[in-house]
Length: 589
Image (spheres, rainbow, N blue to C red):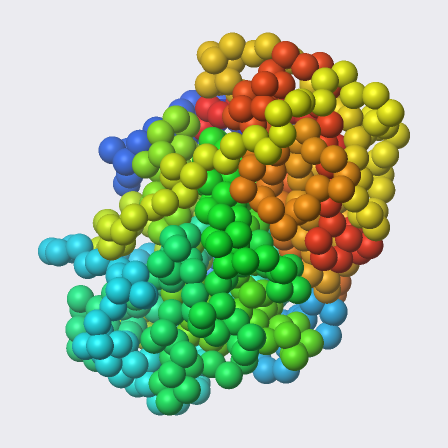
């Protein structure tokens, strides 16, 4: 669906975004005062809760200082100046509509939550005082006492009336409404609210799990209860956790891939076909993928969290590294292949109906906490539009509350942290498979002659680098990226392709534990915009892969051209890549 808005922006008053994230300008017939000094950035946790001066703060208008839903009267017209560059507002609960399936049909049940009596004065959630930080345990380490408590809590939640906002079905439907075009942005009736494919992914799911966990604790009268995380990034956790496999347990879901129960090893790059490889090779691949997604490809906030999205903008696809792989891959690895969209876990609208969803996303949330400890420029965004973006949730007292991204960036302030377990991928830096590098490639077509192209087969091409022989200082300031632009695809399809540097067309992609492997793209069937089932009708997707470390490890830093090989693994005929280029991204936040 084409955007209803033409975008413009005030001169940047925060860190400059990457060239690949620059947005088209909106053309308006009015002017906005942009002389707001130091009001668009926040540098550290010490600034949390402080006011920011400025002549006009459109965020205060959007988020509603005088009552959340009163703000809609000020910004309901698309051409209002308040619509300019702003945080994504919370959903308009009053107009929740039937959610859509990836093929454009309707979800077979209503995802809309029960409405509160008063939508005009939704309170801002105040974090309770934390006397003791609870520990979320690794699922494979939990005791029988913990399993019994968890089973009791889930059973109580499932026993609540289906119209109770705390019931399991209503809690599961939160994901459906936020992710399948059930909601529109408050004040932007033509803009579906989508919390995937952008910088909203991590904070939305953190808040989602926070309230789900508190509700479970309240149902069993235990405010120390903490959700488990599925530790699939370590060898000891690379199977479906046993507490979810008891058919007599409320944690069990029959809508899972029956071929993936233990002792089957999870494939963090799963397509739709089981990998023909040994368990050890799967483990090696998994650790390599985690190293690439957490370290090599995520040296900057923009790469880890995903593309920015502002209020009033149509949903985009610019996934962060972890959302892409392993998040999407684990969803489809668990989902039932006998169902059209691999329900439950294999598609957004039904994913949270499987209790293992919450263990999966607890591990995804854990990746956020770990990533910020890895050094370099790995830190949270300091962009006010990210920090002020908002969501609505029911708390454990059945009160609908507004929360913002800013209030969830410190997980310990939310009252939890994760069990300290080994992190083997941190030291799993892959080594080159080949001794001889492809210098000055011959008989390899340049990327400009290959693209645009579909991935009906493996593609090999050369690509020029804009800068060579970069110093360490250069690398610390700017990451060199391999960028796949204008990707359009059928969003009904499970699509994955792998990317290699300095490889042959006959590369065996099932062996990923080597330096030549750069990264992967993995799509999960979803709704991009209301009434849309193909990305060609929305904003084309972009994927950026960090290659500074890889070029160094392969001894290619001084080369003007490199050879790239793209290997389709699933749905290749359904995706078109517009162009591939090498770019740089300033890692300054």
